[in-house]
Length: 246
Length: 246
Image (cartoon, rainbow over all chains, first blue to last red; front, side, top):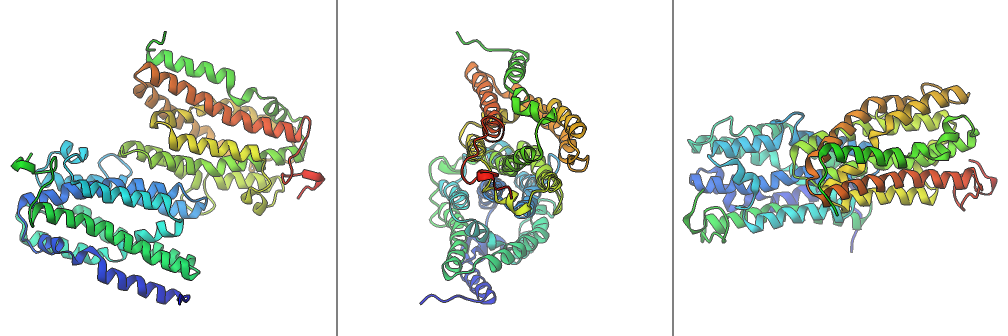
């Protein structure tokens, strides 16, 4: 029933899964890049997405801590550099804060994460837990959503610049940097998975890991959509609850 | 009974503890740098110490994965760079393998770690577990043995070069690099502890963390001494057991 795929077949299966389940297909993404959200909805997206950004280097350090392979640690370390920078104020997290600044959000509110949706925090924690608890191969595979991110980022940059007068190229600097970083990271992880998923069980686990990660991203947009678009039920304590917008 | 110390008093307590319990006082260290070990005993030391070296970046990534403080992550990341290097063949682990090469040990044997003493592996694992499970402050404090390492390294370099014809400056390159790295790391960790140990309980925990780490280092030399010096009882499976020296 389960047969060993070639590396090319495995890659094709992963790309098919991404085509079906990556969050560029989510209605909230379509609204966001299509210019059909108001400023508060875009703020809610950026404030929630900050939680995800903030935990990415924690996730990556968790992966580094799991392997005695010096080469893998060294290569994966570049992701820490990308997110935390080499100096204060540099790196992906700082660039995300430029975006939230540009949207008029208070930094303390964003960094505190207390106004993020519970579902956002749970999804992010599930990702970190997955990387800590599953096999190293699955941990690497869960990063493979980056295979699909250049497309979504290009849509997002052009769409948001075209449609929102409160968005500038400076506030979107995060995404420009990711256009170079994501393909490099994705190529490495894909190559790793092609080499190390050597049994049908491992190949199935790798595909499931990418599916899990698509769920992590999708669940975040589901929560945003439910709270801020339709039906607009903002949970207690979350950004904008009871009509209180900080 | 428990009073809050000033930061200077805390630092003095930490330095007192190191003066009493750092492993430069261990008989095995005295034998090692005094030139009173034979080649096989020095090999056993280097082979066992490799396990400790190999897990240091894992320990450091474990610490990085525990904090949402971008600045702390960025500064601590330098330790990963020091140990894993920026290119294959660079970094502290590669330099340690130059030492074991220079001592005539097979790389596969060293990297496999199977001939290391069980007590070495247990001590190293205890260190990684401590950094994962205790408070972040204790995790940082457990690195403070580096306050005392420049002294021991200086003794070791001059002693080993003077006394062993199978030791060269090239094989000791690891220690030369640490002479610059350790004080920088120790200064940062000491400053962190001085700032963040703000209650008597925290100060006590910080001192206990340094004591724990001194135990981790001491236990490794105890095991070497017991197996390879006095009484010379090498455990089954370990390097040199049954008179089989690889």
